[in-house]
Length: 466
Image (cartoon, rainbow, N blue to C red; front, side, top):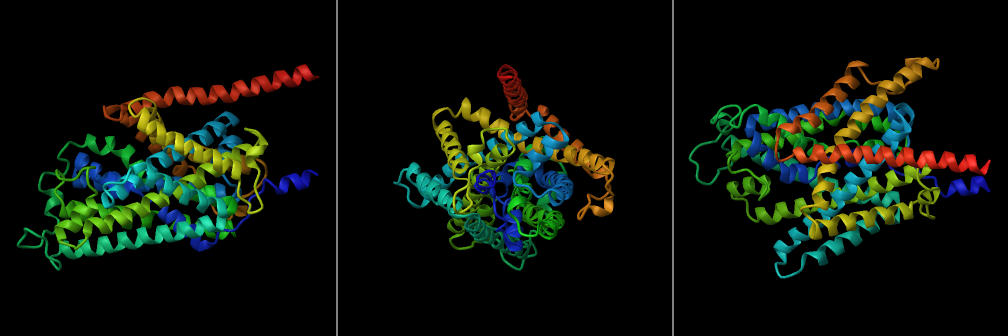
C-alpha cells in the first residue's frame, strides 16, 4: 500500500539536455533585462551599469558553482530548500521554500498584469483583465499537461528571446560602428556616450544601490536546481548548463547594456519605455515598437511559465519533505502535482488582485519581500554547500566521489555568501528600496516562528497521545 501511495507523489525525469539549457538560459532573460535595465542605466550611468551587471554576473556564477555540486550530488526537485533543511536547519529550509514560492507567486501577478498592458497597446479599447485571464489559462494549461509539455513551451519561448537579443546586439554594434545609420547623426557614435559625462555621473554609490535591481534581473538562474529532480542524466546535463552561465550572462546582459548605453544617452533611459525599443527607433527600424513588444510579451509569458513551474515544485517539495500535508505532493496520471499547481495559481491570482486593490500596502510589501528573497535563497545555497562539503568529508567520503566539485572551496561559497549579503545590506543607502529590508526582517522572523510553533505543537500532540 505504501509503495502504491508513493507512486502518486513521485516526479518523472522527462527533461532533456536542450530543455535544461534553454530553461537556464531563458529563465534569466525576462523583464529585468527588457525593462528594468533602463532604470539601472539612468541611476548608475553607462559604466556604472556595466560594472553593476558585471559584479552581479560574478555573484550568480559563484552561486551556480555551489548549486552545481549540491544538485549533482543530490538531484532533488525543490533542491535548495532541501539542502538548507539538511545542512543549515529545518527552520531555514522551510523559510527558503516559502520565500522562493512567494518570489515566483508575486512575479506571476505582475507578469499577468504586464502581459495585459502590452496587449492593450495593440487593442486599446479592450480591458486589461480579459488578456490577463487569457494568459493565465494558457500558462496554467502549459504546466498542467505534463512536465515535458512545460519544458517544450519554455524551450520555444526562450528561443524567441535569445534570437531577439542576439539580433539586437548585432544590429546595435553595426550602428555603433556606423555600418547602420542612426537618425540625427552624421558620424558613427562609437562609445562616446559611455564616458562623456564622467565614469559615474550619479556617484560611485549608485553602482551598489542598483545591485538589488541587477539581482532581480539575474533571478531565474537558480531554476537549474529546481529542475534537477525532473532532468534526465543530471550528472551530465546540470554541470553543462552551469559552466556556460557566466559567458551567457556576459554576452546577453553586458552585451545588451553596452549597446543601449552607446546608442541612448543615460539621461533618456528609464522604465517608461523599453531601452530596446528606444534603440530600434533611433536606428529607424520599421515596426520597432511592435516587434519589441512581441518579444517582451514572449519574455513575460516565459517568466510566468517558469514561475508557475518553480512555485508548484516548491510546494510539492515542502509536502514531500513532510513540512506541509502530504496531499499537496500528490501527482496525477501525467505526473503533475495538480493540487500544488492550483494553489500556486491561486497565489498568483491573489497577488494580481492585491496589485489592483492594495497596490500601496499589501502589494508593496509583497514586492519588497520578493525582491530580496532571491538573494537570501542564494545565501542559503552558498551556506548549504559549505556545510555539505564538511559533512561529506566528515562521514568518510572522498572528493573523488563527487561528479561535480565547486572549485576553489571554501573561497567560492564564502565569496558567494558575502557578496549576496552585501547586496542586501547596501540597499539601506537607497531610500527608494530601503523599505524592502524593513519588511523582509519581520517576515523572516514570522516564517521561523510558524515553523517552530508548528513543531512545538506537533511534539505536544505526540506526547499527549502517548
